[in-house]
Length: 367
Picture 1 (cartoon, helix red, strand yellow):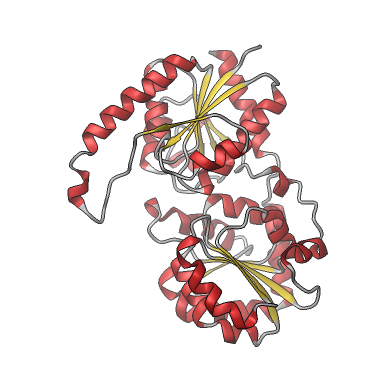
Picture 2: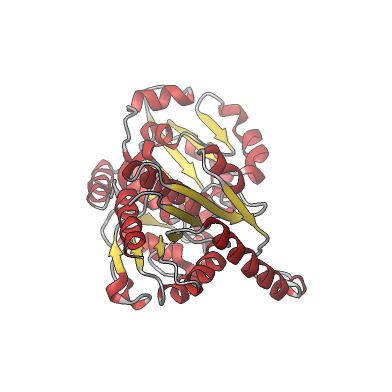
């Protein structure tokens, strides 16, 4: 089959964008000449990150339901109607062989429009608890690619394919050594290094806990790589100033393969992408799930690893009192670190991007 044309829709956070990009690259590797069009939400980070990867993206005028200010939702029905018409126009112009939805604002209108035109659609559900939009889309999707077992409670059983979550190629092929990783961050080779990441946008509870206990952490003779997100960056930088040789603060880390290579253990949110990457990196991890994620899916994601003794968990509202204590406990327990690392390795999937891309090609050929 030549001239494969695929729309990949979704975004909003790195957890949706990076899997989308990985699937796009895999499609072009497996079927050279494939033409791709990404669809995202105007003003969201995909409008910058996707072109950085060499792909074309078109932005939809879409926003989610505002839970904090109900009056801001008055115009929402009109915006949804406009977006639905925009999605239909994009599909008619591009004439895709298949459409892939990775979650995020832009995913639903593009896929629902595609399904109404009988275009084959595939859902890539990253989390262990499916969101409402994907449950609706799953009824007419040709395939649903998932990363966790037990997803038949959300989707038709005959459509589910267990593929794992796709990660960036530089992480799936992790080639940097511990020494190279530490050199990249300007850290010494001695002592243990902790990587603190709150997702691409940062995590308030994690940042505040590390900030208020930084002196206590430094007494453990460790080094720290701390990704704060933009809102907390200046605050963290001021706090870390007196430890500048041992604490490296970033608003965003693009070279995550270097960060994982440098780290001995990790503190992280429990987004699906973070979990997929950490299984490959196999570094002992403490998850602090974001409690306001849809259907509290981050807690479900984290517990899937906790029950396999591959991670520990701290509730978001208990981070201030428990995170650093649990961090110190793991630092002093080499046996626990080794057990977590081994169990993470058994859960790693390095070729999820190609598994999903092959399914996209299959449904596109079937028409």
